Image 1 (cartoon, rainbow, N blue to C red):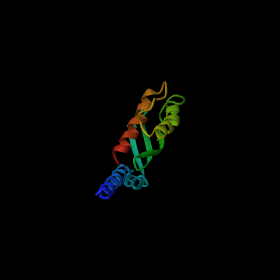
Image 2 (spheres, rainbow, N blue to C red; image 1 turned 180 degrees about the vertical axis):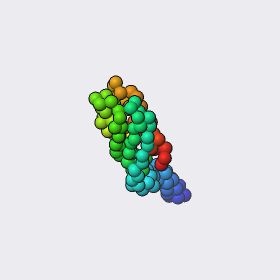
Image 3 (cartoon, one colour; image 1 turned 90 degrees about the horizontal axis):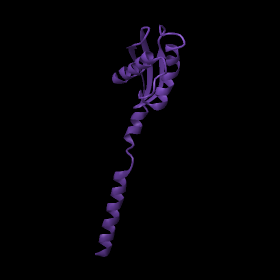
Image 4 (spheres, rainbow, N blue to C red; image 1 turned 90 degrees about the vertical axis):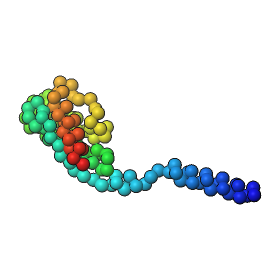
Length: 116
C-alpha cells in the first residue's frame, strides 16, 4: 500500500511539473514574420511607417516623413523607430522638440499593428 501511495505521489508531482512547463506553441507563432504599414498625421504631413513583426515582437521599424522639419522632425524620424523596436512597444519617450512627429510615428506604428 505504501508503494502504491508513493507511486501516486510521484506521478502527481510529474504531472504538476508538466503543467508548469512552458507552452511551445507560441514559439511556433513567433516564427511568422510580417511586414505592416501604418500612417498618421505629422507636423508637415503624413508620416508612414513600415513595421516588421515576428509573432508579437516588433523587430524593425522604418519611418518616412519627407515633409517633417529638418533637424527637428527629421531627428524623430531617424531616432524613434529604433527605440520602438528595442522596447518592442510604442510606450517610449518621444524626441525632445519633435513632439508632433514623435506622436505621429507612435500612432502610425499602432495603426500598423492594429491591422495584424
